[in-house]
Length: 358
Image 1 (cartoon, rainbow, N blue to C red):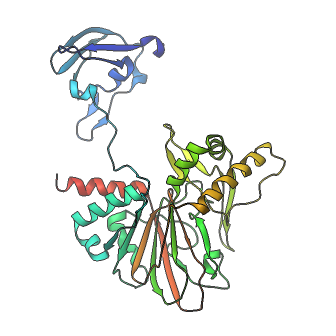
Image 2: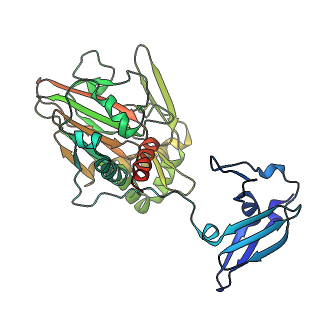
Image 3: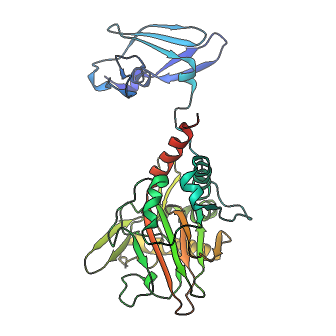
């Protein structure tokens, strides 16, 4: 069976509107109970079971298409089904406006009030950032966020990470140095896509938090420097994070796109980036593009700076938003815990909340 030869089915509705749909698609999406499991809304029918596909009869009414296939199977399709976009709608990300500032939401309200949580999650999906205020300052409070963000993403180096100045720490975050814009665990093939940073106590001066609209910067970069953008989508870059007990390593492009060319991951971590092979012909092109992007990132107006106080939780969509920290000026006590979640699960939570009042 040659799928290309099957072509399209042309449907002309009584009002004159004309649509064309692929023949194989039409057979594959038959909504009858023989082809779909009504209980689960899953497909039962599989195209691989067919030796050939051809149409015996096709009947069009005002709002329905009826098809009889060779072999006698009958399918009925509503007009709205054939004309509709079947992709699930979720809030689209939006680049930060010039006057953007992060939304602050009360922790208890976020946890207890479904409408508050739904509104807050919608804002998070649009902007990539949410700050919860008046949260408890007990350790492991982040576990409570599973109610709204879904299950915690397990990674190495502790389930919940403790970030303090520590002379034995395995990461620059355990020093008093500033942290340049980055996202965590670039050394994973699929880095955590949501990060929650809970400030338990902040008695130190300095150390302001920084957040960057990474995707906003990338879209401007794609427009202004398309060749450099393409290089950063193509060339794999080694990243490594390790300690005495754990080793993580990935060699992936800084930018990952989906099949439509839309941004999926911005993987950026100067501190975890490893030495590239200087004799590889891609290395020079990569560094030229990486330098241009990094200069733009450090000069961007798509950055916000603020002090994260004790009892506040910064939540970022970490495939999009880069975060950092200014240098800590003195030895005042500062204790932050962070943990990871997944963006898919946050979107699921929004769907569940929306269903609850439909």
